[in-house]
Amino acid sequence: MNTNEDLTTQSCLNIRTAANLSHVTMSAPMMEGITPRWLLTFLPWVAVEAGTYRVNTLKKPVSGPATACNEYGEKTIALLSSHRGEPVLPQTFPDYEECPREYPLSIIQTILRIHTRVADIYNSPLNQMNEQMRLTIEAMKERQEWEIINNPEFGLCHSVAPPMRIKCRKGTPTPDDLDELLAKVWKKPAFFLAHPKAIAAFGRECTARGVPPAAVNLFGSPFITWRGVPMVPCDKLLVGGRAWTNAPCGKTSILLMRVGESEQGVIGIHQPGIPDEQHAPSLTVKFAGIDNQSVAHYVLSLYFSTAVLTNDALGMLEDVEVGQYYDYK
Image (cartoon, rainbow, N blue to C red):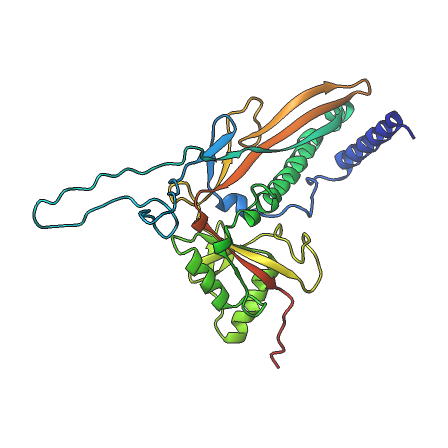
């Protein structure tokens, strides 16, 4: 079958589906792949201009016997602490990097195809165009969360500095491991981010030790906490190197982060106010015309990225085993 015949067949199937949905059901179409996407909710979003966010840091001094720097390798700002006499004050200034780190916006795109007959006559009781647009946008946001975590260029799992990575002491995520992670990200930690299986594995370890973690309600949903820091579930973290899996065992990672631009933490970046923006900031829907088969095309684009403002804002517990169970008998 050639391409034109494929498109014709697909259009006929879409029309039949829309007709059946229009006359048979009164409920909106459901999709099991939609998740709460808590990361997108918990992550502060910062607007940028010209599609780029720049992170300026203190310049690293040239090594030498007279070089003065702090434990992070940043140039020390000369200060004087004294309450007697009239000492000479030191002269100093923060020396910025001449070439700051740049975080360009990433993009997720697709073309939604809707037959004009569907949009014209199959809109009762549900608006077919709105429903197909809604499900497509939901899928784009699911991909957005996946990219924020796993993208090799700006994903959180690939943005953790080497000194901020630690490994599980015994394989399973124990309270000691999370305490060690909290010692890494100790400046106003906001939340842990973990796969649901990793959270369940941590819960089993706490139960075996007789220290069940407390729970807190946020945004109308319960989250277990450790040391007062909530553990946010996200199925985009890989288990055994793969996405969500029903396998009983495998290794994953747990992230801990400080968030917010004012806190020098982890932020999401986007550019609201783009032409043809609809449904959400930085999400555009552009009408791309109608072909000779009466199929309307809409180009959907979602612009976003993330930035880790300082290395100590993001830590990771690696090699977390999720397949350990206990026989409480």
